[in-house]
Length: 132
View 1 (cartoon, rainbow, N blue to C red):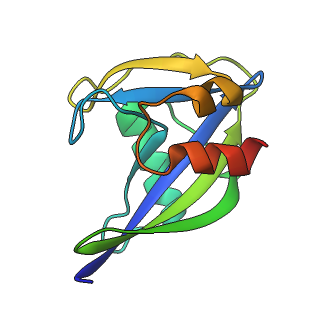
View 2: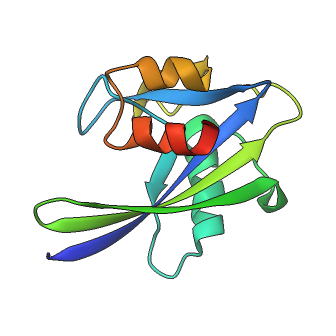
């Protein structure tokens, strides 16, 4: 194993639905939650807040984040540690996707997400753990 990569992701939830983003790369057409790499000397909370702002244009307060846990996935030359959060929103937020990273977004029920076959690696299992 060459490297370990810390990644944060968040289920942004409003009225029993959460935001899914359709990725532009590295595997186009796959859906995922708001997520991204933790930068050097950055806390996981600050990384999550930054990624939410960068990917959907929303300013989330740190006190809205609920830490769910972390999951590890091993690939050929790297291990990804995925630190997962949930944020319960009081209002449906306006989403302005970063078109350099995503092509569209959707508010989706957990059961509908689990039924999809075009999700990023591990999201189906993670959604089951968080919501079922």
